[in-house]
Amino acid sequence: MQDSVKHGSVVQESLPGVLDHRTFSRVRVDLGRCDICNTKRAVYRSQEAQAGICEGRYARLVKEENAKAGVR
Ligand SMILES: [Zn+2]
Image (tube, rainbow, N blue to C red; front, side, top):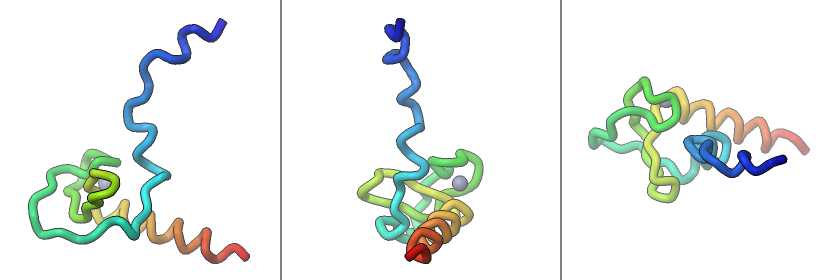
């Protein structure tokens, strides 16, 4: 009954959430659009993730990371 599950939908599911902001660094070159929201201009790039993200997304990554770190 689950034959259809394997088809499709590998799209961008892997991008958000697993990104580590520490692998991103600010760059001056034109990266084009943000790989996550696909709307704003990407200003941070990660070699590791092969992705560019915008200011807002980067800030959010940092925030989420801090939130996790705050839990002891
Ligand atoms: Zn974005």
